[in-house]
Image (cartoon, rainbow, N blue to C red):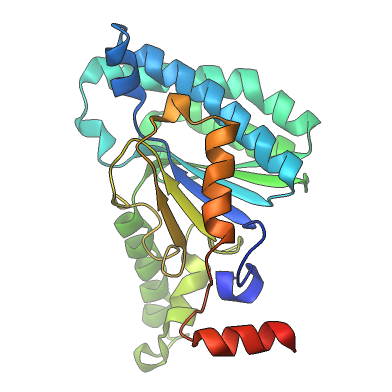
Amino acid sequence: MTTMDQGSMEGGLPSHVAVIMDGNGRWAKARGQARIQGHRKGVEMVRELVAACAEKGIRAVTLFAFSSENWRRPRLEVRLLRQLFLFALDREIAKLHDNDIQFRAIGDIGAFGPEIVQRVRDAEAMTCQNKRLRLTIAANYGGRWDIAQACARVALEVRAGTLEPAAITPDTLAPYLSMADVPEPDLFIRTGGEQRISNFLLWQLAYTELYFTPVLWPDFDRKQFDIALESFAGRQRRFGRTGDQVEAAWRA
């Protein structure tokens, strides 16, 4: 599925929001706290964002929780983040299920160990029939990894003789990507002041509207989210068309 297929052309609410939640460590440091305190506060803001999306009728939210590059962080921080992930799974999944929210994880989560893998699979199984909102957590995820694993799966088809190399197109690759069953994001938000996508959903963000804010993630409350949504609502999404063509299509 693509944003062009199902997302909004202009105005209104996005159907799918993707977020890089940046600034937890800096938020804690500014308050004289350990970085993990910022991550704990960040989990609270995840809860707020998911609730806001559900209340507004947004259909999907995808959060970059741990990139494949985050293993380069200090070992203690990585260990504490793993523990926080387990804590959040134990504490939040039942609440998500009670609110008809589906949970999914994407990325090479096997690197976190069998305990987390099992918790994730259990959470996915519990919530798989929920329809109100799809919450996807990207953990040990990278956009280049996503494209590479999709290419590997297509290569297996070529080797098996079920696909000719000359027949490979973007549409051939798309079903093998991690987010193939969800419309591409309409709105991408990055908090914390950086203005890059940092190997997040490289394929899926091709036509996504980008929104960058200096606000650190633990301070990104509902008011800040509304500001981001207002920015999105004022944009015209053309997908290669002219503005006149888009306006004519909406008048038709």
